[in-house]
Image (cartoon, rainbow, N blue to C red):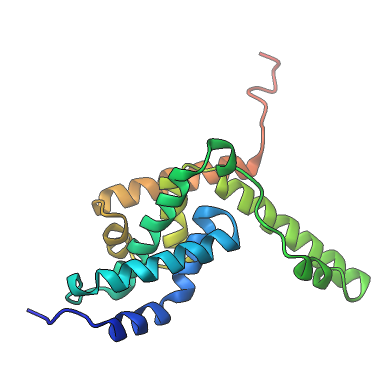
Length: 182
């Protein structure tokens, strides 16, 4: 049996996986400030429960704590706030508009595609969004995702397939049921 982790070990673990936690928080919560607050809450929770962690997959353990903090924040929000716009940084917008016209156009188009993807992803139910983020953005294995979410691998696979289909449908936009007018 491994000795319980110390606060120094937890601090190092959190620091090593801080970006992954923040990214997960941003994708789940929809804005940078809430993500930063959730990661801070997760760090405090991790320190408080350091004695319960006896090794294993540190990244999955950390992301599970971040996820739980995010879900707690989501539970405190109204349904309308869940589907709100993603924060836009004024400095990023100014940077996108600097440079030669053709480069500016490419940056604007890339920003529009990214915003469309973010809106579509934020429109998904949380269980599909978090599974997609952990797999496609954080590049976790199915086993790691199962550990973070506390679900069987089969559920991870099912959520990924369904989440990808929902995302693809959202990105395709409204379609006609039939070209025959029926």
